[in-house]
Length: 114
Image (cartoon, rainbow, N blue to C red; front, side, top):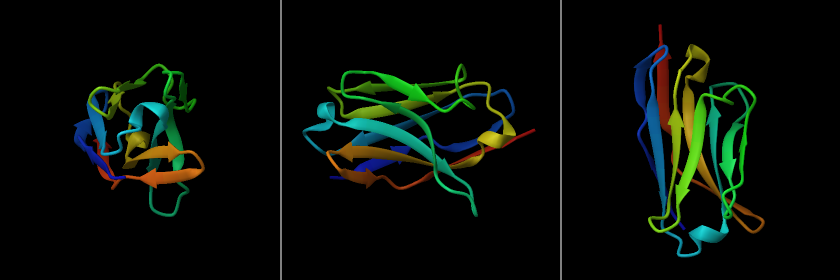
């Protein structure tokens, strides 16, 4: 199983970015997918998750600003990030929960500046 993340970059406060993660696993539609973020010295934190039947969950800090979605036909999960804040700056990782195993993609940097 491989996860390939893309879409990070730099943005001004209030702007938008869209992250995308593509999975190679044919069982993609069955698995919960998530986006996490981490800054140096901090623990990796959950940003948003979406189950195989499209139930979503968000960190309080991003509710109303970020939207997670998935396309089971394309094996992709996206994170639309709006109204970006400096505190959203982090390396973002996508994760696939395969039964009891967590599979991580490579990180993609998001930098928000004022």
